Length: 260
Image 1: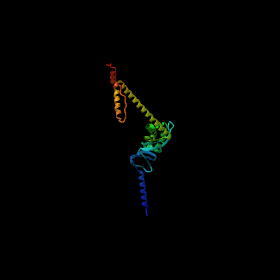
Image 2: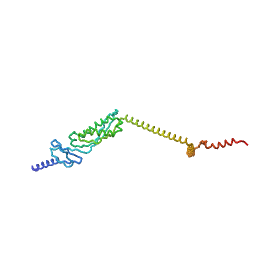
Image 3: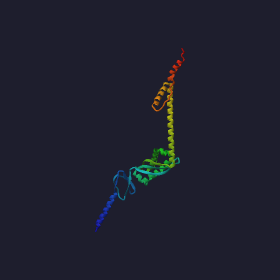
Image 4: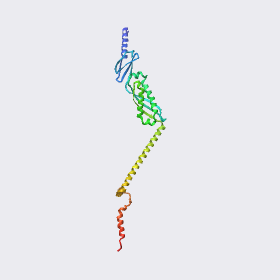
């Protein structure tokens, strides 16, 4: 049978183990402990070994690491009355553990709600083109507004990134048509610029040929050389009058000689 002394010893041993387990806490490098002693906050503890008074003290751990929080997709009506669904991601971390615990009931949940309402508010003031083309500016504005609202809680919002913008089907088709029309416009402009440059070069060449008639003969000979490479073709080309003019003059002179 177990004697009363052994029962007392086991009871005391249990009490000692319970007190030690309640009094000794180990906090990691990225953790801090907010201690409430009889309901009042005392200086922050940690990291490392922390000893508190059981029953009198209550320790709340706060992680100082950056939290990556997904903002659920939000239905947003843009300034130009287009309904889109937008989701984002928020990066934040508590800088002041005491404020993060005492100023708000749950700073994770509160930051998430602030991010959702701010996302709808800021993006609802933007047009669709800005939402698609000025993403960096909108991210910076979202980060500034959310950080300002969470600052009293000791929470620092380091970045906000809009992830996806889901457009309705009819808007996707309209954007595709607009992009196609823009490509056709650019192609026509490029073609017109090419025609203009070609016309300018031809005009310059005509001026040179007009000022130097010999260049026309050289161009004619170059054309003959290019045509001569085609062996299966029959070529008929005119002879410049300047080449045969001396022969014509000689023939005309003989015809005009008096008969003897």
